[in-house]
Image (cartoon, rainbow, N blue to C red; front, side):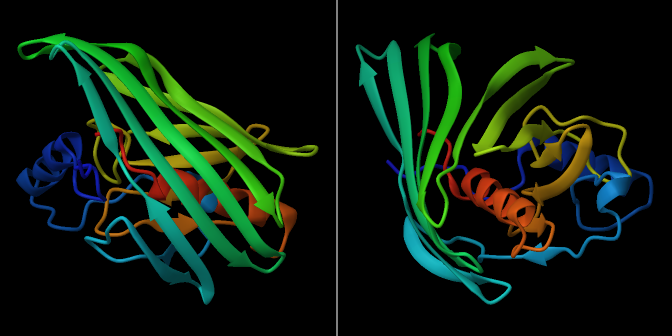
Length: 227
């Protein structure tokens, strides 16, 4: 079963965009960015409606991907979703190959569902990188389903956290509109998933930090939600 989650505007994004329109402001909804990334170039990649497999260029660097999403239901009450992702990024350091899986288990009856095993994303890289990453759903705070995690490659570590704010809007979205990547307390990169295609802000991809941000951003941007 093909997943529905593409870079489409989610419910919270639509609500926030309507609020902006009601204020007389008509512009494309986009994720709010921290001050530390204000001067960092915005790089878009991919294309709307891309499917299970293909390739694209990220500032001249080739990315090949293969992904899916499946759902297994038992007696129409227990449902387990799994979304595998494999991608290869031909970056400055060479080919970095990622193997990722997103999982979620829900119990439901009728229109009511409860996640018995919340969404998690695990990734492992090989080739030009030997990193690992785990991202999971945190607590629901003020109606927001937050996600947090960690990317690790040797001594280099990044915190990963979901973003629920759009530029110019005071309304928080229930689902994530993108992700930020932090080194210590400083946001060093981000990926905006609120628009037609992902938009990435990163350090120089030839640097170890830039490589780390790129690898993590591609994973959260490319993976489908479990069906």
